[in-house]
Image 1 (cartoon, helix red, strand yellow):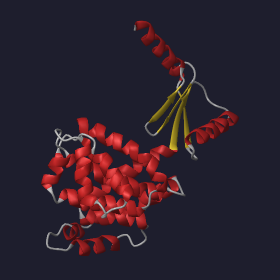
Image 2 (cartoon, rainbow, N blue to C red):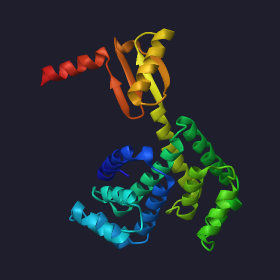
Image 3 (cartoon, one colour):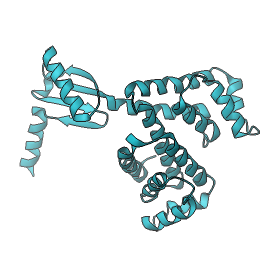
Image 4 (cartoon, rainbow, N blue to C red):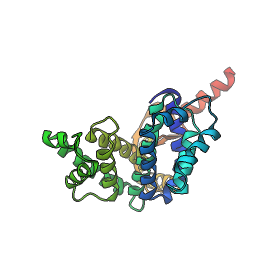
Length: 270
């Protein structure tokens, strides 16, 4: 996904973020259910990605299709999705799949934070490894004549200790791989888990080593700023000249002298 679709996905993911603390797996199941509707109707996908249609027009179309079939929360997320611009019809389905998987991942994150994400990662990785090492399993999970239910049952037998979040993602990948191998789609879900884990890691660059007391104050300040217990990695980078640079996931907090000088130069040049 690139260009306008990539920008639209980033926007809807940002809009999804405030909804995640109270999300549950039922919301993700609703979103995956809407994805089934999209994937089964090429005309609908074209209508929802038609640049000549307004966002409100597309929202009305979606409401006609899913009203009463999913929760109001899920319907609201889908309306936000179709209100954006998409480069091609396939992209809107890929984006909805990403949103649904993100909800599942956030449920694993709730309560236990990064430990929950690590547990989900291990469970998904276990599935990928088992399937990758067995060609018979690969054929069985991709068998066109087998029912989706039988494939899901087989997939879940491979990870009997998996929790509800992992079971939902594996079930989705086996039931509706959307042109991919099930294990490959689970691998894509693993990438989303890894990206989510980065929200719990603060990479800090400073000009000189910090004392234990300074590191403690830094960690306390960052935890308060982000509202969660972060793992803080500190790196000494003399080229910064002064100040501190912090990145947590996609967020950057930069108070270095180099950055301030660069900003000053830009202002002077303007």
